[in-house]
Image (cartoon, rainbow over all chains, first blue to last red; front, top):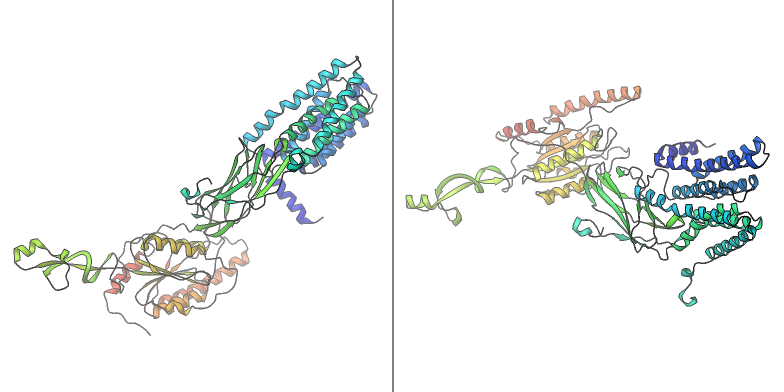
Length: 190
Length: 443
């Protein structure tokens, strides 16, 4: 390996601010927590082996370490995909309350990596920025709890159909979001 | 930035790189996870997957709703472009028309001898009411002319979903040398001029009273001593001594730099001491009304500053000193014969570490040409050698240098180690005494 690359990496690690280390640690911790919850729930509902429970945790945390080192990349997307897949494979309770902390850990990891991607490693973010981001976290928390409450309320009363309907609505909304922004169109097309 | 003229700063310049808003990896991540998890929930009728998708869907909706529609306008600039070593100024960037902008980050790249605060050079700010300002404090630590490299300014929307980037233009910074402490209480060397603050040996126009004498044609009416004239019955005038100034010619040796400069707060190199001492001597004499000129050895980029006095002229000398660039290892360029021009009745102060023959040759030539020359030794006392071989070689060179300085002193040129205030007092007193005696000029 080229020694210059090693020295550059060491210099970059040394110049990394303590605030960034803390944010990265939180992000990796969120991934570990989400993966542990999935493994914990799997212990309840499946006859999973130790390797089956531990391997996803190691993979997720390892990828999370890479993701916080390369926040402006698709690595974090892979981490989230692994975690969602782990939950999907290991659990089969559609109304499990453990879905709430898992979802919050996932979105927390996403937000922290997004925040890390806005600045170079040596930067220290202003307190006002951190407070603003912390304050707006209430919205995804409320959305998560509301959807979970809806799922529990509809469970056993044609809940499957309700899930399909809600899911379709979500897909339609996502389609609208992914589509071109009307503000990008020329004025004549409006 | 909003009122640069009031602070003496240049007008802020608009950024030339106005890219549009682009989605980030974070936004792609949000939409992808929300879509895939919702799709899986529909296909496998798993409500728990919808719970996982819900926060991402909320973030995605918020991000889209708060997507900025137009590029903000960026203005940036330094509060001050000319500073003294150890001074501070602030680089500011302001984003206006920044609706839906959430966070603004500016990253200033490192530049030699310019400290940044915060030390990372990165500043962040939360935008409010469509406007955000980020600032980085810039503190030059060494004299010279430098530029603040283009600063990358990044703006992001809510949840860092969309990103806009701009770049500020280059900002020149002139760092004037911090004048070392200097004072001289001794008398000055007389010159040919009839202007200045020192009493001449000849009567003439001035402010210091000499005698009362009868009126002569040519005397000004304001010099008439009316009281004495009334008593004596003849018109009497108050005669004065002519005021006289000193022409101090600073000769700065920039052909070599010994020692490693650590900036204003650390150990100085020989060139640091030379520049700061020259600035101090110029400040002392120019502000007292003496004429000061500047010549630089070993640098063709620095113009000769002709004699002058006052604050404006002092600023001119200081700015000329900032044009000196540390040598890059080349040997001296030989003696400049222009040094002998107009060096008749001047006090020439040569500042040099005296490690090359060029400076000593120039000092000897000026002395033989009739100038009163003082050689100020600016070699640092401790160079902090760590290599024993380099230390030994340097000691041998110092022995040779001692012999060279002794030879110069035997020719009548004083070599004075720079000690800050009062460094030149002893020399100036000797000059004042010698000026009363007959002199012999060697041609």
